[in-house]
Image (cartoon, rainbow, N blue to C red; front, side, top):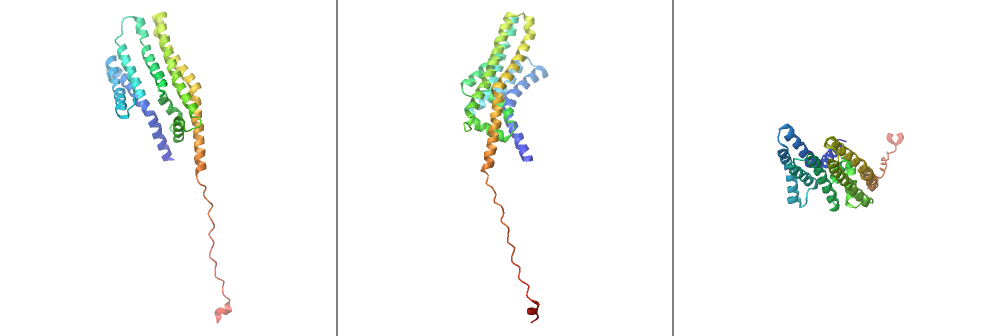
Length: 257
């Protein structure tokens, strides 16, 4: 029991590690440097970009591939740094907030076009739940060795496409609102648009992709567990051990001789 619990905890941690390093650490460091240490927005963004920049360069040099999550966060930070120089027109100041959403949206949609949907890394920990059986089922579905692999990979692409479209729509809505609605209205409406967009993304991606993918992972895990149980040899029943025959007691007359 302890061994299974420990291995399950390690699996959960390994699945969440990319999210922690590539998303949580840069975001937390930005707010810590800006609000905790009083750095300017530009300086906080620059220093919080160090981890994703190192991760992106390390993956490119050692693994000969780009770290999609780290590269996307780095791109978002660079865009934010450039937008920090924008000033003047209040409507432009409101519209520039859509630059981050558009960067995320384009990055996600491009990753789908390249056959490496970026949102998969964020979805996997919530589907496998740190369970080794589910982890193995996920790998079989992703590798194409499972019966539902084709459907699973299609849902994987749909999940990222939904988030890419939702974020891009949020960007367009912000820009349209910035130049068509009163500035005072957009100051509070921008946050509402973002919250509604996230809610729509969760509901639509969950219904179209995440929910069916979880069902396929669960079904594949159960099928794998059943196949493994059938493959185990059945132990033959133990044969009873015959007791040695006891010598017959000799008659008392014979002993008397």
